[in-house]
Length: 130
Image (cartoon, rainbow, N blue to C red; front, side, top):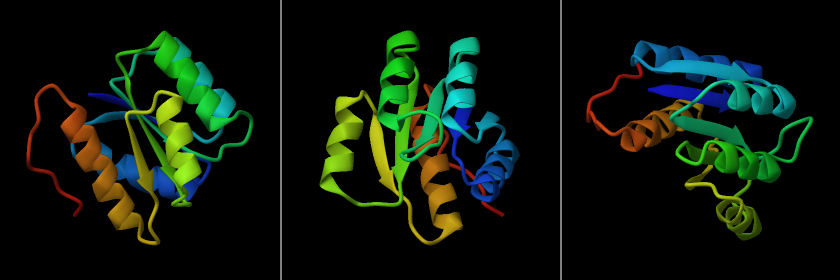
């Protein structure tokens, strides 16, 4: 399964990438919206994990573009805020799911890996964070 992670927090992105690669996922990382947009245009992904606040482009507009060009890609928008407005905007932009980031990177990683696994046509219930 091919995953694109677009998150401007490089430390968090690299940690998520490491865990996903250990769980046998092919993952590319973009640290800003414009490079993420280019990667999404150039390569086909099964799932896209998208931070809600990115430099270079509005995340909700990027979600719309990804869904228009790669409508079979599942998109998860992650946000540090648990606002009703952001959730509504996420779903209206075409996101398949919305996740509020917690203070724990391990919690975030486990939620993302779980969501990506559930998005897979072949859902394997086992995964490891260690």
